[in-house]
Image 1 (tube, rainbow, N blue to C red):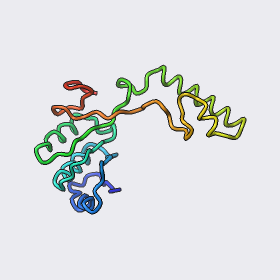
Image 2: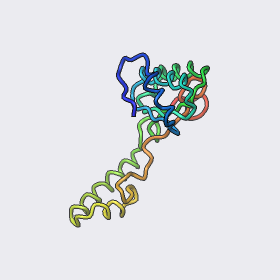
Image 3: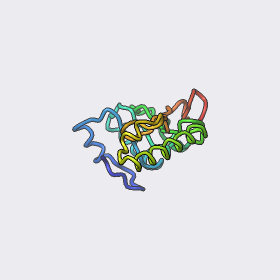
Length: 153
């Protein structure tokens, strides 16, 4: 974990520590201005693994910054976007998830066994994680975040 401080222009010393134990991939959960600085630092540090950024980075500014950095040993970059269309889960998925959540809560309340209650529904697994994808990663294509080449998320 590397702490990100808003407004810093250089994370070189922090990112250099990654050479000691290089990760297979990096998930960046900050915002576009810092994402651009971090991406530039990763490129300069020679990191070649994939970088996946949170949905807050699915902006034209970060796409332009990532594209501009592509000339300097750029790691592949993707951003997370809602899984179905621009509004996240579609209405049917949300309705099913809400119904399953209420059923599981009622069953867990009645039996005291939340794990079994969650495992009995089609939306949640036995750990309580949703089985429906909420986000998906989209790549940088020609300076834009794209579902398919030439299309913005």
